[in-house]
Length: 358
Image 1 (cartoon, one colour):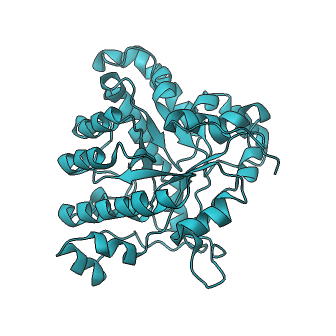
Image 2: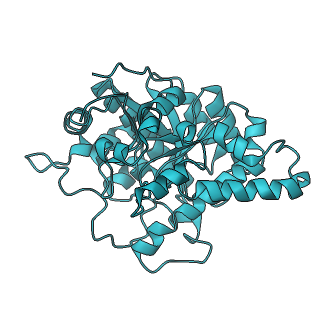
Image 3: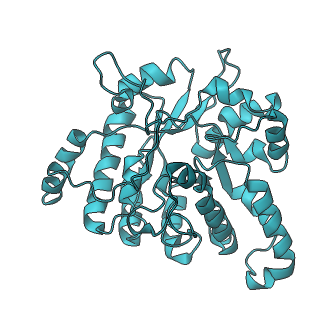
């Protein structure tokens, strides 16, 4: 692949083995983890592809994503990725644990592994730090503890939630993140886990296929809530990132909000302009899993219906089963949008230096 622009992968999932967590835990949390307690688990749906790619292994059988140097060598370098944002997937389930003290301790330990071991392993890495959203004081403390460290560029939370993320309960998290110039991101995969409740507003799907397809519903709810509950009016520089939620649903939801705003804006007087204008200033989305219609022009038409040149950022979702390589993803987008989507938007959001293409 000829390199024509900076490439930023905004969604890489490092593996963090339990052995790396244990030394960072005090008792009794360490004993619990040693005995196999992982707090909130998964829904248990069967994915015939597995969660992680079966080919992401080294010659000795160990997985690439569990080793920061191996991931850099076997993923970043061959795909000409200039920066990789590390979003630890397993920590997201802890954000919905019914046992806050244990979850908070584990989340902090996961964050420390990423900051201390992964960021030090390769200059191309940047880190998202996780928080437990249902203890606001603890979440704010975690942001304050790590938010100004070099290489920390984002706060991440699960997309599944007990209540919409625009509600005022969560605003102290956004205030703390904004103070450190960090966007807040959400990532799917925990819908139905722990204290989140049913994974859809219609209850429990009967297959992974159905569950996975419906993940976008939480994204629609959070976007609507954040705009209409006034989070961005309260924090004018705050940015919110929707990772791994697709893109084709964005235009019709913004159209619907704009239309309703004309008649109902008295109910939300802080929304002082069309919601679509607020969205394009404060939301960014990642590309994977980008919709792949049989006619590629249909996707291009969708991208023309909202400012994708400002709101869309490339991601691979490595090493997950449905990930996209940079060359595959770039081909999905009009040529004139590729520099912005593949790197420029992420560089601006995360404060990264654009690199001169080779």
